Length: 462
Image (cartoon, rainbow, N blue to C red; front, side):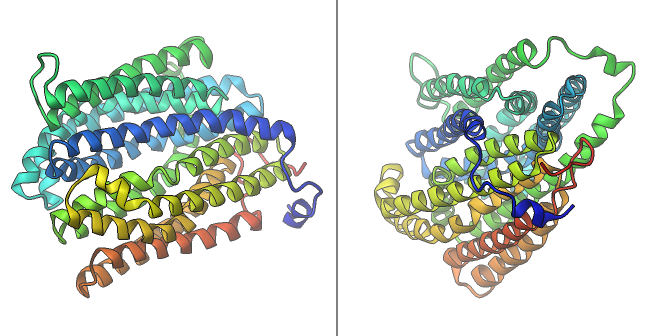
């Protein structure tokens, strides 16, 4: 493999057909991700009308729940990569086995996670340092949402398979429907409308759990009418250990990178909790706001990863490299532009969520500091998705493990807590981590060292 032969090949833009494929994937993924983020933001907005304490408690719980959901991603990330590469290589029989194994394994893992979140809710939240006021709000929410976490396990598996098979529009439509149901459920159960009791935080939890159950049913019905014609029952007689092995080879380091990131965020939240309720509430609001700034980056990176996976499966490495450059450029331009727009309007946005002037002041400053974060974050989102799609799954994990925990966690603690520089120093260390990893990942993509990592055999430059 000679990377220079690919880098020097003619063609600096993806072909029109590749651009159309990228758009057909990016648009529904963008809308789906927007709806998912809106769902979280709606919960925050509605709970902010209940109390800032509710927002802070649910913010901490959701971080823990999302960390647990990353366990499902061990299988789902592998599913997405293998399905996209196998479809590119036209190995359709192996697609069926991969999806069947994924559903089976994630159901078992989901039931285990659900049990832990329900029975250990209080102990977990105490470890996070929540005081008695926040604990009472958080435990009820975690028990309800956590008990039905296995619904999300099956939903995520179905979504991964549908996206990788160029059917991203279906998860988008399902999430749109579920969002409407969740908003209505929140309105009824948080505030006690139409004769229902006003349950506050627990009402939001019931609405979220019910919405996820509906999404799981619909997505799996669609899956078995499009990608699969039937469940591959033969896997119970002759279990496809090769496919499970490949799923784990991709999923463990890929989910490990995400697990490391989310764990670092939880530790950072623990540090921020030391700085007081108002600082913690400001951080929760800001995190929900800035997600909309990198929404497009998530969508085009995921769409680009599926396209890259198909190209790698077809042994078209030059096309994969060019698509990657194209995706990275637009992800960076759009994300930085949106983060600047959010920072400019930060005080106005925060005033819609809370009337606490301290929270608004802290949050507005954090939104400006977050512009630095968004210089590195889109590169990292692109690179982890793109490298994973090529089969280069270990490199992002090792880089993330070292950079996140040395810069963000250790550096953040030293500056923000030990030296007493507070939340702003913590945010600057988050930015330093994102930018450092971004520089490393750009060098990796241009080096072409990912070119021989495919799971469908040795690729040949096209």
